[in-house]
Amino acid sequence: MAEQHGAPEQAAAGKSHGGLGGGYKVTVYELENFQGKRCELSAECPNLTDSLLEKVGSIQVESGPWLAFERRSFQGEQFVLEKGDYPRWDAWSNSRHSDSLLSLRPLEIIIIFEQENFQGHSHELSGPCPNLKETGVEKAGSVLVQAGPWVGYEQANCKGEQFVFEKGEYPRWDSWTSSRRTDSLSSLRPIKVDSQEHKIILYENPNFTGKKMEIIDDDVPSFHAHGYQEKVWVGYQYPGYRGLQYLLEKGDYKDSSDFGAPHPQVQSVRRIRDMQWHQRGAFHPSN
Image: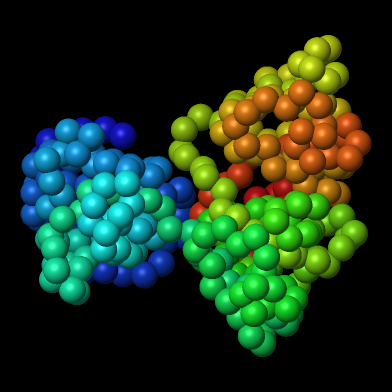
């Protein structure tokens, strides 16, 4: 988050769809037409007035989408902000009910289809789903991630084998898992990612003992270790990003069971690349 004065070169006003670029980024201005104090955000902000802004007069969304709220702490009327320019409050609100915008967060969107290749009954999610069957989707045959990333689970209530979904298309079950152990996808939740430095420290033994490896903003296609990390990573059972997946969110993992691995075997790790488009869905080392 940064506060500056002045206005950048303006693009044509109005909203446009799309944005397959980097992570979430929005610039909020205190005055209309992108003037006055401003702050840049890449993560949720429950109170924009904490950012030295007295009010919100205009907004530029570089990558998104975002969900904005009339009041602090994500309360009140909601406004969806897609990539584009919003020179004054009535550009993001059709209700004309209020010109207030005091909090906003990235908007995650994932669509689950019952059949392969994005066919059949579908359901759109923008938040955690502990049981897909409760949405009316009997079986997940394909997945379209419009904004993410997300983590899916083999069983309901976010249990069992994990599957990391980044922005892209997953036409059938084997495009989101290389373990080929199960085609079941029963629950999902969004993953919180920011744009700050990625760092992970990997230890050879449980309880943070033995040889260690520190990785900053890089991927490791092969190693034998597991451990502690900052930001969000995904570990794999085998070298080359193959086998079972294990989501490593910020925190301490004293042994492999803490991150859901039945055996102390994690042999490759990579960063979660939010908003990255994979035409074939699953992560490929060449990307």
